[in-house]
Image (cartoon, rainbow, N blue to C red; front, side):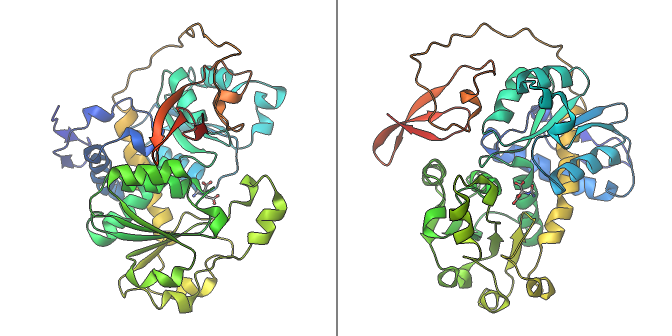
Length: 385
Ligand code: NCD
């Protein structure tokens, strides 16, 4: 439906279809189309005017942030966004202070919190947790990051920053540097870029930190051109955007391997000088040593502006998703049909492998490089037959 959308204050008016976003979860960039992304970005443009002055549109609405992993930017920018829109915030930033420390399941936690809040922002190390929470909750669930899989609010921020800097996302050449295997901002960005035309990605990482096959298959299927490599010097002269990621050492099973990879990629000022004049440097932050301080003093650094863009973007999604949404009271769960013979996802860090959660494994047969594989519908990973 093409609706005329009034942001409801100061006469700002957008001629965009917003109805499709009412009540929507934000689990993955795969759940949105290009038009919906544009609606979010155009709303974020309007929200730029209100990041310092409260507009009051979400007065009497409550947002819960339940974070099971550390966070600075994601939690604080969601909370700032809700406050700037006049709403209230409840939640915890440390599971040790909630009943999770007593052994409460994620499902039970969600079923409690949905009756207190109009929207839930969840961060969890278990992959597929946000998708599972969204299936249970009667209010929108916004994924603040699930393991190494998705980080959609970060990607909306990244795409918005690229759009703002270059006027459009189509046709951009993006060099993605670092730990591409474990960084959720990297996989999520790849899913987001799949919605645009003429994209080229240079996927540069140490050999054992390459992007996972479910993501490169997605790039193939979406018409995104990509080249994999190990030396950023081979690609940097062609890049519009140099997106650097942190080595996600907490996601390695073997800490010695993480230690050995420390310092294996760095965007030095010398290296950056080989990039085009108008290139920009992004990073999801926190950066550790992969971007030295000297880069902050170049005209190409944009990572702090990128983090700042996280507020209007999250304001936009909160507004679009919950302003007109209706609360669906706590549902009784459907009976499950799990048997011990059922094929399970091979990823022990997947929500479908958590024995106390009321979940049925869901594997779908797909083809990857001519081979049949099973893909988990929760964590997205492949399980060989
Ligand atoms: C990241 C995260 O937690 O995914 N930070 C963020 O949300 N901006 C990245 C990281 O921890 O490296």
